[in-house]
Amino acid sequence: MSGIRVHAPAKVNLILRVLDRRTDGYHNLWSLMQTVGLEDELHIQLQPETTGVCLRCDDPTLPTDGRNLVARAASVVLERAGLSVGLDIRIVKRIPVSAGLGGGSSDAAATIVGLNRLLCLGWSAPEMAHVGQVLGSDVPFFFFAPTAQVRARGEDVVPMRLIGERWIVLLNPGFPIQTQWAYDRLAATRSGMTALSQGITRLAGKTQVDWDEVLPLMENDFEAALAPTHHVLEKMKRALISQGAQVALVSGSGATVFGVFPYEESAVQARDGLKRQHGWWASAIRAGSSSLGSHETFPLNCLQVG
Ligand code: ATP
Image 1: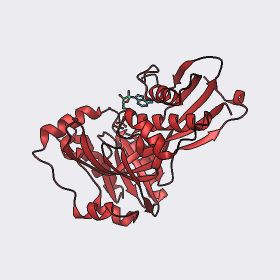
Image 2: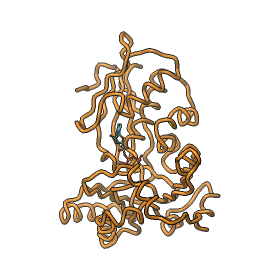
Image 3: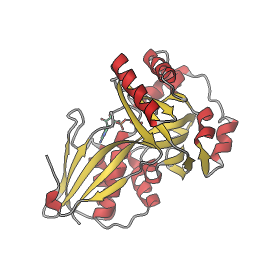
Image 4: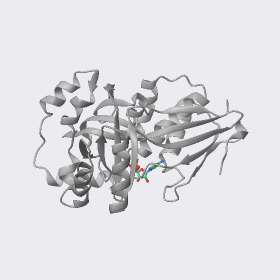
């Protein structure tokens, strides 16, 4: 095998608590993360005659040099595996960038999964997560998707089974929020840290949970921090609730807001209505079934590139 296609799903944070600041400057987190059916696509081809990573991306705003998380992930894998081969990687970008949906992290994880298969490295999910954790705090989660509790800096991941089916409507107002800026706002706006709720503490002890138990526990610490500067987030939440969402919440550090819907029809109707009415980017997708999936492409020269 010398070519592979890997799907990289977006995530939402059903719960995101930012806890105490650590001595290394990072915060301890407690999150319940969930992949959704909005995916980037990675096409990875081995070029055994050459060396170095040649990266292309259909989103011209993203760098294709060493700043791209895919290029960084590929370098980390090759270094760790002690290999020197050429790689041709093409990213089809569908997940909005700097939107709280973990697109860059998922692309990085997908690169590791793809190279693990392509180069027959035989790494387990925990080994891949260990390799990926240097690339970002959301990266380890994707090896244990679709649902997991994520703790500490993001490296402590406990997979969970989320029972039931729900549909997610993602709304994005069209501007990015840099994660570091959101953390700075959080530090500037809150006076202290509150402990995990009893409900979340109970949830943390379980290996499976029902959607109906999760819905009343959903919260995100970034919401209060972003509210004074980004009124549109509250507006998007209200709009989702008025369209029938059971819960609406900011994902990650924003600016994507998502609503949880019981049925596909109600989610699609909300997506279409909100897009038409407000002009926001919107997507209606299933929650719960997406994980990093790989599809081998053979023969290699059948792969469409460029
Ligand atoms: P998170 O929620 O994981 O903090 P995010 O979802 O808000 O992140 P991303 O879309 O993952 O944001 O991108 C964050 C940053 O990473 C941006 O500055 C972007 O330029 C950079 N980046 C590097 N490689 C990629 C990639 N392949 N896809 C998206 N962003 C990338």
